[in-house]
Image (cartoon, rainbow, N blue to C red):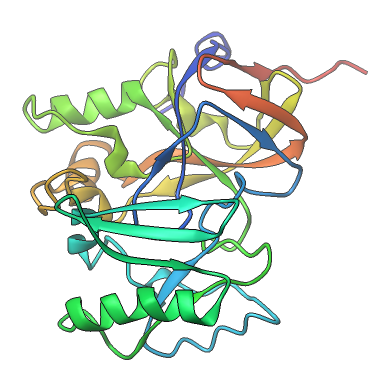
Length: 267
């Protein structure tokens, strides 16, 4: 699927900005956020809940595949939890049906234990070993080994709705950092290698996102009610939706900002 330079060069607008402090738990909406070269959004995927021993060393953090952690792709019940993380106190508060079920400072042993105890008691069927809250300095528990910002084109989500026969698809199923409007459906897939300009910030698109079964889970009902990756495969011949980009120049971005594909400078 190829688009003309004019189509791909169209500007887009950021309509949603999210971070995920704890892998697999609730997205947190943001209005503005600073981007730093080589980094994710601040605190994005800063923590993960280990599902049995993974060999992760907080003192020498290295990327591990998501199967080592509690995750929506296999543990859809996570979507029934409402979690909030406070940067100033490092406190995670988890609510279930409106009631606080666990809370703790994730930078203290006692705080982590409070969260771990909740998952030990309530996620026994899903556990392959003792759950453990993990962090590693500025490590990001991303699905890919590099530090990236994920971007979803809302017109591509609308195209998926058509593929599914008109079913409404909540864009939060895709757990992106940036949701954008203005690009033709699927044109973002041709942006790999291109540089995106958002104010002073610059992001280089490095990879298309291959979707996993996590997108089948409704983020509101926690039900596994759609078959998005197989639908993409049948209609497009691949399971890609969205792009990963690396921050290559610092800048602040926010909802309502314009994204432009930066044209190469002529030398």
